[in-house]
Amino acid sequence: MDEFTITEKKQDGLVIICLNGFLDAHTSNILEKKFEELLSLKSFKIVVNFSGLTYISSAGLGVFMAYIETMRNNSGDIKLCNMSDKIFNIFDMLGFPVLFSITKEENECISKFTETV
Amino acid sequence: MNVFLNLRKLYNTLKKIDKIVISSSTSNLHLVREFIEKKGDDLKINTNTLNQILVSVDEACTNIIKHNYNYNENNTIEVETETKDKKFIVTLIYKGEDFDTTKKSSPDMKEYFAKFKVGGLGIPLMKKSMDSIEFTHTQPDINSLTLIKVI
Image 1 (cartoon, each protein chain N blue to C red):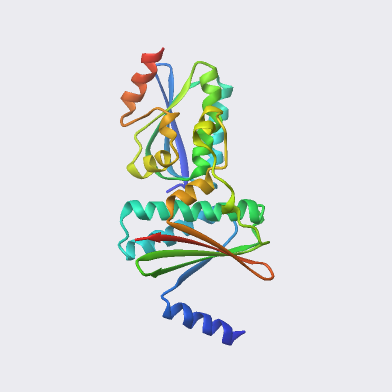
Image 2: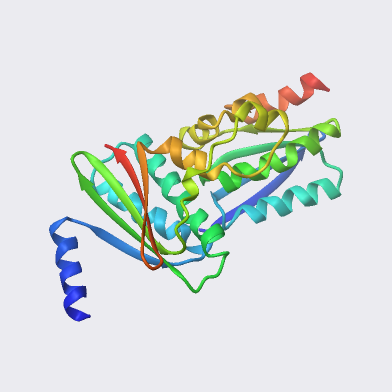
C-alpha cells in the first residue's frame, strides 16, 4: 500500500478529496500540494473524507490550519467527515472541532455546504 | 568496546528492553510507529492508550529530526521500550546540545484558532498523550527523552 494518496471527485460544486494511508511529517507535503492546486483552480469549497486514513500527526493537522482561513475568505470552507475514532481523537485532543465542521458521513458534510450557500 | 556492548545487551535483556535504531529521516517515522504498535499489541495495551503513545513518540521523533538534526539524515535516533510497574516507557536517545524542547509552553488554543495559527502543535500533542515526559542530557552530547504512559 502507498504511504499516502489522495483521490478526488466533484459533486454539487464542491471538491471532495479522499485521504488514504498515513499523514505524518513525511507525507503531509502531498496534502499541502493538493490544497495549493485547489487554490490555483479557485476551488474553495472542500470536503475531506478521512475513511481511508489510518494515522494523522500534528503535521497533518497543520495543513488544514494552513488553508482554512483562505478558503473561508473566499466564501468557502474545509469540512471534514468519515473519521475513525483514532483520527477524531487526535483532532479532538487539541480542540479542532471548535474551528472545523466534522461530520460522520460525507452526505452530511455536503449538506452543510448547501445549507450555507 | 565489545565488553560494553555485551553488558548493554545483557542489561537490556534483563530489563526486557527492546530497541530499534533509525536514521534521522521522516521517511522512517512509520517504522517507529510499527515498532511501538507491535510492542503495544504484544502487551495488549488498549487501542486508545496505544494510539496516544504512537502519536507522542511520532511527534517526539519528528521534533528531533526537525529541530535537533535540521533534517540531516546522517544521524540516528535510538528508540527503546520498557515496561515497569504498569508503565510503558519509551526512551529516545539522540545526539545534541542540552536543550529540552518539551519545556516550551503550549499555545492557548482559543487564541490559536481565532488567529488561524499554523505549527507548534507537536509538543502539546506529545504532552497531552503521555502521563509524563523526562529529558536528560549526558556529557558531551547525548540526550534522552523518556515518554511514560500508565497502561
